[in-house]
Image (cartoon, rainbow over all chains, first blue to last red; front, side):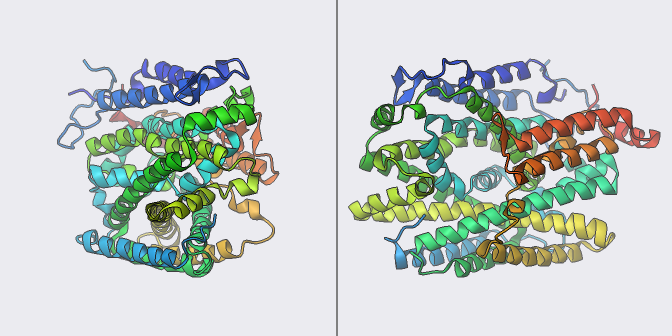
Length: 86
Length: 498
């Protein structure tokens, strides 16, 4: 069985950084407010949506790209690193 | 904050709540805990399952400040304080950077404290001691902050019937009893009970805030008319500050000694993964909810200055409590939630502090080779003495040198490169890690002491971390470890080699 470690899956990190960058309002024109969505100004609503996306992405990464030991709790024999599932 | 409406009911709530937590914990979570074995006592025998591990992570991470301080921040800053939701999710990103490998290594070598990793990886007493001192110092300050909050909450809840010092000592004794009997297993069980109360209290508070003070939409409209800057896209410095919080909290909270020990304490990798996934959703049930309370508060109590805004939660609770009997009792639940949040953070910090004193100071410096039972006893005793000293400082804070007690994340985060780089880069040397930690701590501490908390929105702790990493890399390359030390590192890394 191969082991999976998130740090070694290269594509995860640029995606994560993109999600993080899009969640901070640096790219909105300063002073803008409208439209108001469910009581949130647009920029804050986008930030909130990106927070949900961040949590969903973490769920995906933890579930699919983290397995350092097999289900019985033992470290797998003949460790072979690499993040991607084969 | 003060809630004079509660008075003697508050006294009863505190006494019954604390005794309930102690009784239930002693009954449910002290069997099978050996007080003569470090791992059994401080890490629940590395046997915490998904429910307890999740709740002890949750209740420990969210302190009383989340419930009382965060609505006040939202009140003052407006929508930019929404950053408190993603920055708490960032803690899980912080974990993701090192927890998978650290869990695996900790299980293989039986780690008890974060310093055990320093020992294994760098094999230098000086490096381990400096790391231990930085962590102990950060933990002491964190603990002091919790004790101050505890005293204020008790005074507020009882309208001054229970004096500050008596309340804090009472709760500390309760914590000493269940921790002393059951170690981390007891703390985790108490955290589970406290966590449920926090969640119920926060949910009840936001619902009653809507019912009593109007919706978020109305509050936003009102803010646009009265204080548009709190709704508009913030200036770029605020965005920098937002990123800075991501790093400071995301990495800082993940490398708290008690946070690292919760990685060690998981009974399996699956348990740890499940707990972290659940944790990534908790900001929506906590910081997001109290953010909405703070924004609603801007309409309910406009124009409060900084000091008065700190009382916002108390004022809102007072108004709700006076309107109906249900509201009154619900606000007592909210206040219990505040108390629960403070207790659940404090008990974990005390236990972690005690483990550092026991394993790292006594076991490695004062009396190497001592029996485990003796180490545990020494750690417990030294921990109690230090906590009592802190209670005195919290009660009568010294007029000068107050800044010494404000360093928390700023100092703790300086141990992060030893994990983030040390776990993956074989070339990191003991000289590099040591000089990195020291230079980062000096810069972060210097900025705090001189009153410069941020630079263009970036926190001193984060700037210290950047310097720390640069120094660590440069000096690791310039002064590599000796050949035999490199061979040891090579062996450690062979398990995870590409």
